Image 1 (cartoon, rainbow, N blue to C red):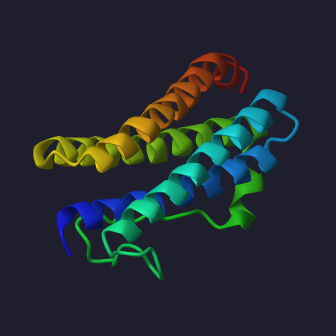
Image 2: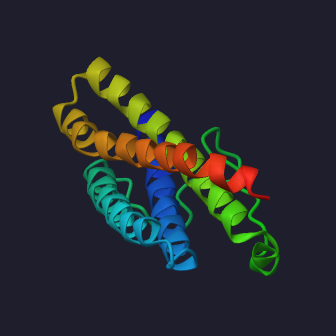
Image 3: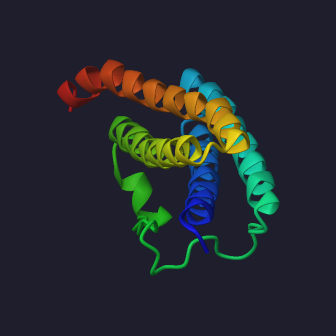
Amino acid sequence: MNGIVLTLRALHDGEQQLADDLVTVAERHRAEHEVHHVATDLATWSLAHVRRLAEAAAQRDAEQEGPAVPPYSVFATPRAKEPEALVPRLAPGLLLLRDLRELHVAAAENSLHWEMLAQAAQATRDTDLLQLVSGCHPRTLRQMRWTNTMIKNLAPQILTSL
């Protein structure tokens, strides 16, 4: 398996996980209307990326079936998730900040994979791969900007009101 296919698989998993996490955050913070609606919209972007990545992998005979990245892979990121039973123990504001931070980190990881694919596409003159990256990476960057802006806007009020 070559590095491009490995990166496609890692990114496929990352975008799927980000979509799932965005939906979870949207539901968990339903009362925060902006968070709920924007996170839901951003999840649809990641799901669109998942579909496009699966198509790109299929074109390279590397269909996305089963676990996309073996645990020993250089691109695998271990993610220790807290059990849901612990989540309600945080104050709602702190929980929201934690969720936004985790979304930002996940989007940043995806962004780095998109950048790696872009560099590989340029080096190999792969116009299809470059088109995929050009169509998807800007949305991932937008996901990062949204989480960063939300953290900047919410952190002062939440952290000083405890």
